Image (cartoon, rainbow, N blue to C red):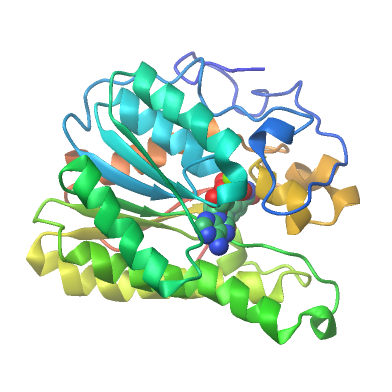
Length: 298
Ligand code: NAD
Ligand code: MG
């Protein structure tokens, strides 16, 4: 199922054998438990030294998009700290092994980022164990579908905002004490920020807020030499989708709404995060790079 992104290939036909079945996981969900395996670029991503010697912290770096970014960053020459929930240790250890196999330092940081004190401690530990920090990827996210707003409890609404917005705010503030000119922050938004689905009211709202937060902060930090940008994925096959992110019966077809007519894979996201972290994007500030199979965005 691994597809070589370096080969000349029709993108509408890539992963054409990938047709996930309807499936559900409790809790955060694991890559290890996906019945249809996601492609994180394990067999394909080729580094070319674009992040040599850099030090990165990736929230939600155990699986899905964050896992693919962790693999790519290590192969580009970066040391990588990943944050994740304790229940995701199995996925995290697999990514740690892949980072180490690339000859880089891996730091595993289990804990709940909806806790402000933990979010700050997470940054402090990453900085201590990596010996500094110059790339911050706010990528952890909570997405639970509800057909009716009356089904969203106040506690769940709060947890979605704590995970997607407050943690990004806490972690970014803590990181800024360490980020030197040349550093980059990349936040993960979504097509949901522009084209909200009726069953993702709370989640979609956080994703629009991430875009706006990032565009404001990008202007504030640019004079200090720190670039802030955003990646906005479309439908990507990850554990979050199978853990209540979408109605289970809609999973097989969720990619068909895109012009490419298929699900995206985490491996297809990693190069966007590499570009925005590396000096190649030195004049790209406050941008949202959409990686969504062709769905129009503002
Ligand atoms: P994923 O499940 O692999 O990653 C999400 C990660 O968030 C989890 O691995 C978990 O470690 C972390 N997380 C969630 N709650 C946490 C908490 N309280 N404390 C610490 N960590 C926590 O799924 P993914 O799809 O790769 O998600 C990564 C990002 O991409 C999310 O921000 C998501 O909203 C965004 N996104 C995904 C899609 C998609 O189709 N998969 C589309 C658009 C945006
Ligand atoms: Mg995970």
